[in-house]
Image (cartoon, rainbow, N blue to C red; front, top):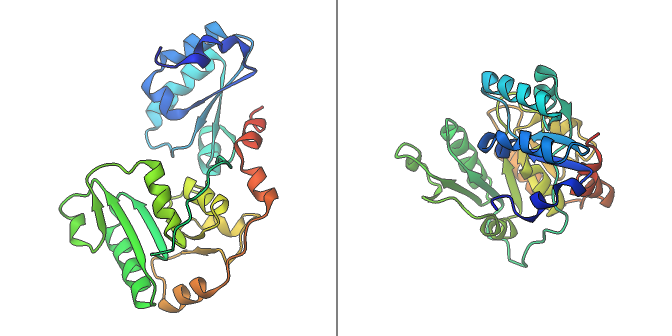
Length: 255
């Protein structure tokens, strides 16, 4: 009952792809699927950076026992943990409501240990004559000293999309040593938004365009950089780029 109708028809599927967080919640699911659908090709897709190596080793053993291949969206994690690579993806059916832009750069997330960096960028954007909107969820007292917008609850995705509709650009903060592209990168591509990111791997991406993407490869960004970036004309991404990162093409890359 928990998994719904697809689980009742599981023998019909050629490919079964589990996201990492599903496995984190229910490791027994691997054994159940292997038993119920022995002819299906089975995969686990990690779209979280691996921080607990011991837990990964344990889950790798379970995957080997049950015939699941492991994929990751980050090249560094693939090399370190001997996993196969597949990109992040996005649903091309998502569209934004028509809204006037009230902000130039949107950030939604946790402060964690990056409060001072976010604050410096926030002020630089303001000093350059543009409008940042940094929305912080589940903030502690230390984080609330910054001039951001705070929410005590998680923001539903549809509500977040309303925020994106009202912003010209999205801020993407990569984790340390991350080279895989986040969902924020996909949102910028599919929703036609400018992107400011700390992921330096974006400069090597086939879709990289300095008019659309500003990569912060240091802790410092100047008002002139911000002004030049937001003054430049946005170049819509090609349908080939969107197709490559679509869910349909993503599924095909599992082999």
